[in-house]
Length: 238
Image (tube, rainbow, N blue to C red; front, side, top):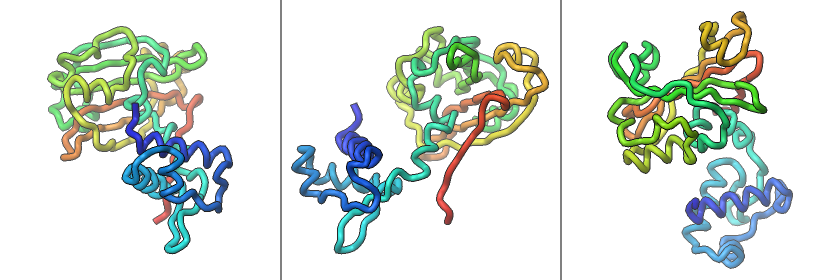
């Protein structure tokens, strides 16, 4: 279960989206939130900080906190395919395991893992389906020692996210992702697996996951047929 401050963040976000707290309105005070939700002041303060940092609310000195509405960035979060695969349970994405085991690293993945080209790493590759049709090919690459003692060889989809699985089994903590997006033509095997014409390009999304020290932990590669997918992002103008 998420921590209490995260549950409060979600509850307030739902109210903002539902129009209970419309844009421009004054958010209830800390005291009112404490009373209504039965939580401590540090929980309320932490939740309000998250909402402010994400752009849902703004503080005005001497007046209180005002609702801004659902920020542009919030709608884009689920559209980051690398992050979605790492943070959502595999059972959320129906598909089949097409490969699992030790393989030689391709040059790009080796560079992202800061490993020697052609050295061995563990690969878990799933063909993900949407509406019963193959949609994307997702490959997870990680050092062999990080795969030991995990369920990554299982043909069944994991009931938890890759992030949660590796954290519980290996004690690693994901801190940030460095993402690269390229385009290329599919191999004959990729075109067959994805049920796509050979003359349609693939969008290849590489997400290199690092810990707080910058050490690479995992690389996720998501291959998307360009005629079925588009990628969207939003970011603040600085």
